[in-house]
Length: 88
Image 1 (cartoon, rainbow, N blue to C red):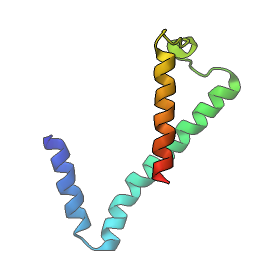
Image 2 (cartoon, rainbow, N blue to C red; image 1 turned 45 degrees about the horizontal axis):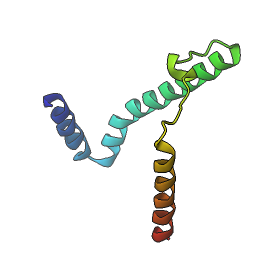
Image 3 (tube, helix red, strand yellow; image 1 turned 90 degrees about the vertical axis):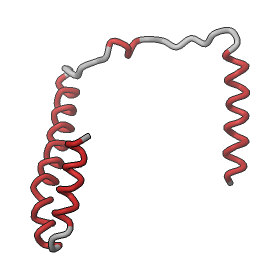
């Protein structure tokens, strides 16, 4: 909590400066974040194309409804459609 409040105070102090100075202060972290995301996407695509992509253990689990769940699912679907209709 103190660390989060410290960052909020730091952001507020930097934003109270001139626009040019705050733009310079936030440019480096922004570019680092964007480049990190692009590197992560490129690494994931490369691993997928090579065939080395990680797979979670739970990816092969199946979902089977219990006996009373089919009726409940039907009621939930009808209520969802009615809500969508009422929202326009």
